[in-house]
Every structure is written in structure tokens, then in C-alpha cells.
Length: 229
Image (tube, rainbow, N blue to C red):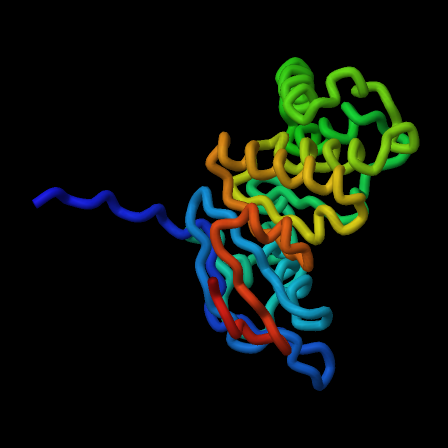
């Protein structure tokens, strides 16, 4: 009898996660796990708790109940300084509205996470050049965000999120501010790069096209996980 290989370990898990704002339960009893190299879409109507859940998964927000684990560590038990360190070292985040620093060039925006991690200057330069080439912006390294199109800005944001080789990538409506052609290009890039690096991706989206690049979908309604497909 041939032994089957063990499935990849969970990189990220939520265990009975709840979050309240005032008297309202925004999340209630959310439980799931995401394996290494897996892409998962968080879907559901507006107000279902998707972004709140993403913020809890990334250590930006703290659940009122339950546990968030990144690898063996419980993020919900970390203090502010430890959470900041985890976000710098092990998590990359991509936003709908890019959040590039307007006074920095494309290369400087991508380099910023490496500066925070105190990479040597020479290593930073090599890695930034590599990532900008990978997202098709080698010739735009010196451009400011105001000189870039929306699609180019989002590709810079992707490079910035991935430059430090995080184990987990979180994306909040990454194509929500792009036209369909640029959105399709960004999704293809995300799929290719995370596949190449074996990175785990969790993406909040209303887009069928974005959900389609994922291995699995978790559907939220009124703060509860109601369906998985």
C-alpha cells in the first residue's frame, strides 16, 4: 500500500472568532484554516464582516473571542509591539486604493518594507529590481505614484507586499479600483507570483474574477461563515 503524503500544514487559522462593535456582532464563531500555498477568497454581501475578518487575520484588529493563529503563534495574544513585528516580517497586505506614499518613487515604495526590516542596502537594491521586473515595471522604477496608471500603481503595491517574502498575503478588494483589463492583469500576476513562491493568499472580494483565481471560497453573511466551496 502506497502511503499518501501529508497535506500541507495550516499557515493561518481562525477558531471561533468573534468581534463586536458596540452592541452589534460583526463576526460570530468564524472557524476555518488555510494551508500553505492555498488561495482563499472571502466573499459575501457588504456588511457581512469580510474586511473586519481580514483585519483580525492580519493583526490590525483584535477579536473579542476566539483565536487567530499564524503558524504556531496566536496573534490574538500578542501585544502591540509583537503584532507590529509579525506584520512587518510575515505578512504582506494589498489594498484596494494602493496606499503608496506619494513622495516616494515606485522603487522606494517597494523598498520600504525591507528598510523597516533593516536589510542591507545592496540586498535591498537587488530585491527591489527583481520584483519590479517581475511585475513588469522595471522601466518605471523612478516614477512617482502620480505618474503611474491605476494598474501600474497596483502592481507596485503587489511588489511592495511581496518584497520581503511573507508567508501570508492579504488582499482587500485588490481590483476594486481598476478597470476590467487592468484588474485581469493584476489577478493573473497575483496568481502567478504566489504560485511561484508557494505563498498563502487570502483575498476579500466582490469580484467573481478575483474569486476564480482562488482554490476555495468562504462565504460570510451577517458575520457568520455560512458556506464553503
